[in-house]
Amino acid sequence: MHPLRPVLLALARSDRLREWMVGLGLARSMARRFIAGERREDGLLAVEALNQQGLLATLDHLGENVTSETEARDATTEVLELLEAIASRRLRSGVSVKLTQLGLDLSPALAAENLERIVALAAEVGRFVRIDMESFSYVQPTLDLFEELWTRYKNVGVVIQSYLYRSAEDVARLVRMGASVRLVKGAYNEPPEVAFPRKADTDANFIRLMEQLFSDEARANGVFPAIATHDEKLIRWAQEHTRRHDISLDRFEFQMLYGIRPGLQRQLVADGYRVRVYVPYGEYWYPYFMRRLAERPANLLFLVRNLFKG
Picture (tube, rainbow, N blue to C red):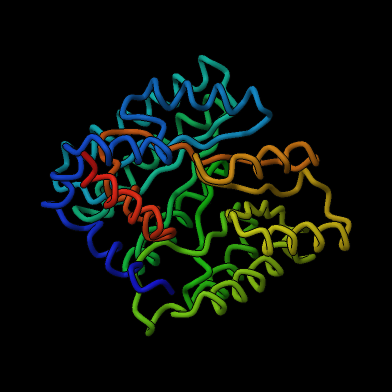
């Protein structure tokens, strides 16, 4: 693990630094590498461009840990209007939501109500909703809300993080349910009591979880794996494994982040794979941007050097 990673992830929670960074022109410019823009229209235009290249998308209105019911309901309204815009433009895109943006910190019942409104409308317009996974303390509440909703809707999926020790058990349960699972490494600063501290162990667990998601039981139950990584070693493993087990290319997809490895995204599409790009937008971009810096601290050095130019 890079020594700057835990520092950057801690700074992602700093309100004071967020206020300073949001007003910094260079930081906003750098953030545009990873974020489509601050307006809904920016996100929709980014998806149109991706669709033209054969790429699928998931739009995410950035925000998390709201502190009032009004904020939670406003965020819900934004996602509902986003779904209507996606459908009216016939974009090949779903949406992603964080439960703390929908009010989970305030009340699980409030988050459940807002989430169901979103999933219900998405079902009406033929779109998919991915419930994003947040830090460790939210994992069980998120899975509980997902499982309850799954009994009534099948156009919804969840995310599992391979750096958590508990994930193999979680995936086993989701496989039995036949759920759609997005597998990621994980982007939060978790203690060694709950998460693998070494990247090599996280990667090894990622492969074990892929084996579960591609198992005979998973296929029989209709599990649709979304393999979310830019790591070419893990991508090659998935390609070789699915080829060896005669898993058709329409039974899974690769997922990547907006602005990261676009050449690889297009190459996978050219090779016949389904590729979905996660496209974030909105004014609340600072925490997301800091997590991307934590994944590649060299970007922080670039930012700091340019702050002191001229």
